[in-house]
Image (cartoon, rainbow, N blue to C red):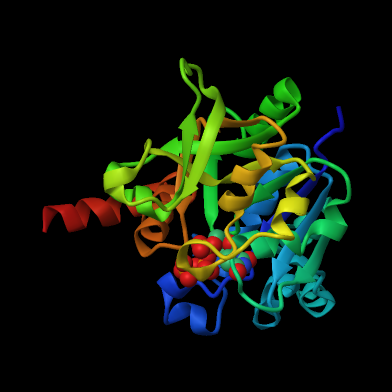
Length: 291
Ligand code: UTP
């Protein structure tokens, strides 16, 4: 069985749920305290053993590239001021992994964005991490959990979470086979954004996947689906005619940074989790609560 060495991070969408901010700045650059969302995602990939990362961009999102590259002028400045901790902070990631990029010319949907990664992926299984979903995996990173499930099954694995039924129409939803009880389930079907009344389950695909390269042959011929977009879920459904597909309930907490509520929740939680900020954040919350 081939090792999962590569990760793809689509970040080419328009981020309309976060306008007006996303008019000029990608939502993947929204900071959680002081670090852009997409850096947490690249970090998760590294901690999960990924060796190569491809970020899918559009031409308006060059600042993501700037963030992951070296900045000699700033480095020189920090050095001259003897700000060595800051220097280490901005050098750390470029030294850890070489991030590669490709461009999605038209925002035709997630399925189309993934298809742009075909050349980078080649004939290997790969991890897919959506650029606006942040996980705090418990006890270890979400992608690592999925890679372990892939190693057991040799098949595509979709990371899932249970969502309230009123939210199922925002997600790809999984339909497990009969007698499925463990957290790793063999799936019977998947459906993109079903209406609440007809939703077959509340097991939502939560922005993390291990995909086999067979997905590309289906993406290439995929018709538009829900919302007029080329949907990855539709191609996964077609992949099921050829290969088994599993779901794994991811252990940990997910934040949907592309939504305002998810961003606010993550901001509070990430500040509370920081040694240097937790008591300040706690005080802010307590004061508001008293009022
Ligand atoms: P979303 O549907 O959350 O992103 O896609 P969006 O379309 O940018 O956001 P809204 O709904 O308008 O607010 C999940 C991920 O897939 C990427 C997005 O950048 C996001 O990280 N994506 C989506 C693409 O790369 N290309 C697309 O055509 C669509």
